[in-house]
Length: 203
Image (cartoon, rainbow, N blue to C red; front, side, top):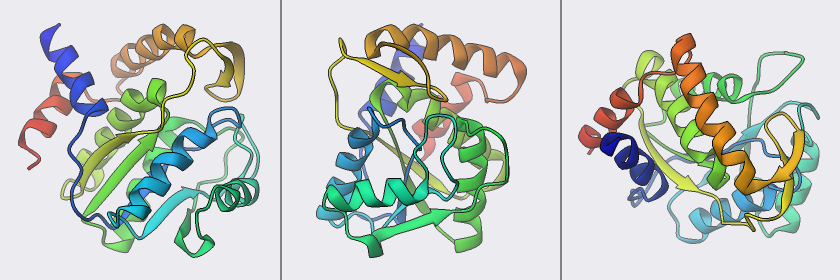
């Protein structure tokens, strides 16, 4: 249990590098998207990244699509030239593993050495574990850092996870932990112990 807590704390409170090539903002539902926009803008304002990566697909699974995401990011004060789209394979749905595979493939093709992973706080652990699981197998030299999006009200109802459900963010926490356990058992994710080992030795 101590290692499980250590992993969660390291993911939620990571030390960011002075510079990384880019940050990937996970595709969030509309009620949650400003959380990742805030983190992305923070990274740009601090000069830590030059590019914010987003999924290039159209609306699906609760994601408003690249065009609407770009427009919303622009309204949030993020310059259009800082936004870079990551090609996704054509699928009927969009989920965390699809995004993780695509962004790791994109980072490898672009020769990125460091990437910041950004998702909403309740999804950040699963998002980071998923990207790290893919990277350790497909692009092991890529250094991943974690930055959760801005906190939002936990007692506010919000759709999440492929746009399903409309319960409070706090009520989503247990489901996220269950998904991590289930996807690890399925072999889609590396065990938490392996991700913790990566973070302990990353720097």
